[in-house]
Length: 289
Image (tube, rainbow, N blue to C red):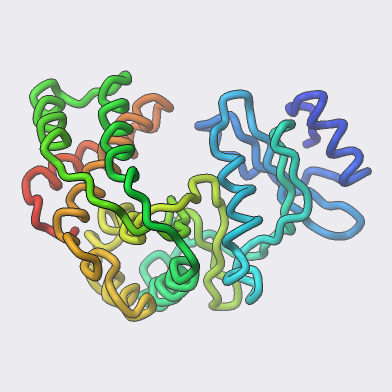
């Protein structure tokens, strides 16, 4: 393996940053254009992220590394940024040892979720902002998704549009969020949970980081949810004003985005999850999971 699949500009920059480096593993998903390569340079391991032309995530990841990761990097729980060039679509971090939690025995261990809750609490307890436009912008984004190619049936689309059109748009309290908080972005190394992939990081309501867990792991095993909340100390889905309806809105936004994005990239199982999330949210708007 080498850098031959990257653009000429990316290869030139990497030759300057990491001269003589060798690619030892390709961690890319294959669903999107971004390539994730594990490399060795001067006896040290690094992760190279090389974005394709249609990538919209690298800027978020760079911002997260620059602004929000010190609560994790200071204790060795997240990768450390080494180089970045947004114009060229490149980011290099130090390699973070660990075994992916997804599809491993750790995915069923409550202690992993307790640590994940503790780590997320560290991230969320940083300075944020009050945003008067966040809810309206989120509504517009969901309506935009519904105008894109998808396989949500017409009756459900109309119901979703009516729901979104009826929602209030109060000011929202935003904090730094990971944006894809689930076992596919956690590692375990010597019984210690670590965090990777900040491509969806942004300022959002804290409860938004629980949407994927609620639709997956918490739904599958309530012990995992209980352990997570021990680590987090509180429940971001219930500790804000208007929390019940805010959580419903958050679930619907996430469900629409999941079903539509997954359809566009050809991820059938994730698309099916999105459709289930839509159905369950609409069936019980008061439900917290």
